[in-house]
Length: 340
Image (tube, rainbow, N blue to C red; front, side, top):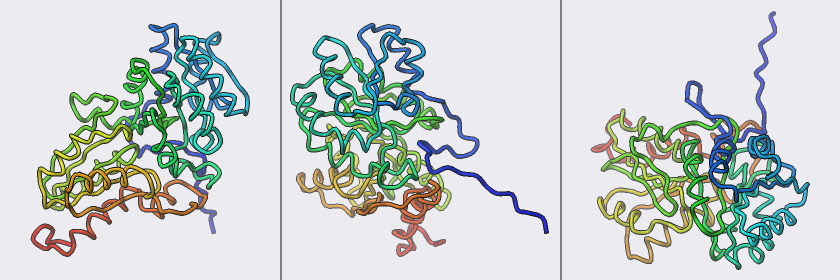
């Protein structure tokens, strides 16, 4: 009996691209180098994670503007604050869990309270690693949403990341960005004229039967789910909300109100507690907008370790599971979806 070929996979995966999907390697690192060519005030700083946050690209191009702080995230944030006080634009990188759990107080008092121009770039947001709760930042948005003066960005793909770097350079104030690193898919190029803007949600796909408002890698899943549902005769709109805070209240309210009977799904690579879903739910409640509302996100629990495709299926954020969620909702309405 011949031995079966053993499939190899890794729990430490920071981005997922389906086979055949165009990708860009280290889009953040390359975009920062490009921005730094035009702006000598940009410096790169990390806490022993240059290679794993794609900052090594910047380090190779500008070694005299790169600072390795060692495994000391609190020191990293304080040093970044000091750089900002001296007129520099520090891009400080670490993992999302270390920024949100370990360095919170230092970010709050040294950076956010003083409105300093520090850009915090954090890899492995949500469920983008299979290394378990020690590395999975499933609650980072919930932790940071309550911090005054802090802008929160959750980019979808390499296009978003590339464009957000220059947007952050032009923006005066502290920013927290959830970084997709490594080989990052290029999804938004499909939408002609798309442009990332801080504080702006963007309508990508129109549809009268359902609306998905999404951020981060879940926008990719929402687009794929919309395409599959269209083949089944269901039109699913997709709105990409790359900025979690400040939320684009006007655009969201206008789109939700356009079809009052259309169900609203919020999809995010984050716990269903305290993230984009609850932010939009509270907005709708405050404005007196009554709609059918559903969340697609990670459960309120510590997640397991393993290969990411398996975990994404298990916790309901893979494209397959997003489609199942939509199908389940529409399965009872035979006029909309008679084949299910």
